[in-house]
Amino acid sequence: MSKIKWVKNEMPKSDDQYLHLMNQENMEKAGFFHRSFPQYSETPLVDLTHMAKLLGLKDFFVKDESYRFGLNAFKVLGGSYAIANYVADKVGDDIETMTYERLTSPELEKEFGTATFYTATDGNHGRGVAWAASALGQKSVVLMPKGSAKSRFDNIANEGADVTITDVNYDEAVRMANDLAEKDENGVMVQDTAWDGYEKLPTWIMQGYGTMASEAAKQLKEENKRPTHIFVQAGVGSLAGAVVGYFANIYKDNPPKLVVMEAQAADCLYKSAEAKDGNIRIVDGDLDTIMAGLACGEPNTISFDILKNHVDYFVSCPDWVAAKGMRMLGNPVKGDQQVISGESGAVGMGLVAALMQDPEYADLKNALELNSESEVLMFSTEGDTDPDNYKHIVWGE
Image (cartoon, rainbow, N blue to C red; front, side, top):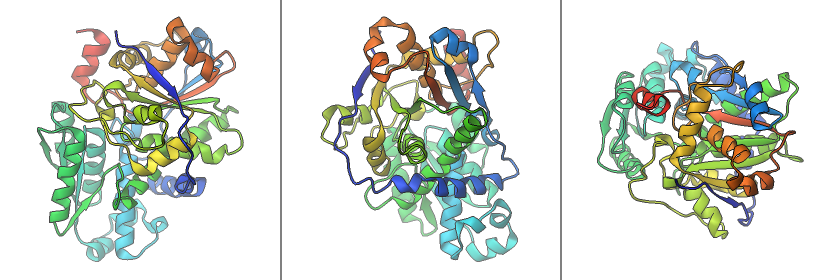
């Protein structure tokens, strides 16, 4: 069985030019926008009291995104907010005026017209973009990497998108989608990763993801809790950058320990941290992992800057870590609430359990100072978005 790998973040710090993008003011703007949707409701923060006791922790909280907008994943937060910002830019309005009612109004349709939003996805991001485009009367084109699940394809198609499973990996699918967008006079690329010359929309997407982080912070505060440790997963790192950036902003003087986890087959951030020089490392090839949402080999440049300044440890996780987490959350300790968490959502549960229960990882547990006083927060970013594979892993079919 492959082993968990980890590295302390010793990359040189930068001038932190992007941290302010994830501050409380920007997160409040995103939250105001999302709350304007009739489908909005705050997703649960599940308190696994008995799991915490079993593992030897004080508290263990799981933000359950399987309830988000009825789409079974958090990704719609980013795509919808990016589209709204793009429309606001085009018509010369402030994002704070771009409520759902305004975006779907006949007046805005006349003012803005129609655009086609292009993206690449393993499933959740594309479904979110397709849903948002459809809800706002726009078009979408979605490319998926080879090996994408038919159920995720169907979910995107059912939202009205023109969707194709390609014969290339995720990062190549991003390039293909961008080429298509550039050739379409009404085309707009909506991708949750940034590169030189493409930074505005990814920033809006990250800020949209911040709604999840700010909800969690508010829910913890209502319980008079403060996280000592936050575990967040990364593909390109946009979600991780949003979460790490937000909590680094609100806890400037005494931040929680911030841990970023990746699929071992696509651990570009871990490899970048391992090199210690502050430069991005890229992982290529098929990126074969059950954690489809994390199968990304090229980091978001904006997010990378935030992460190298504020993350404490980067962890590279084999597939068994996610599978273990899925089974534990789906079959909780008696008295705890069940969380249906997909392959990319459950890696935090699997990692924390391994650290607390397996002596082989005592070094990392001790380095993180995980103990009976620790209050842990993780994000289950998707439910069973591939139901057949979920059953195969959890039921052992």
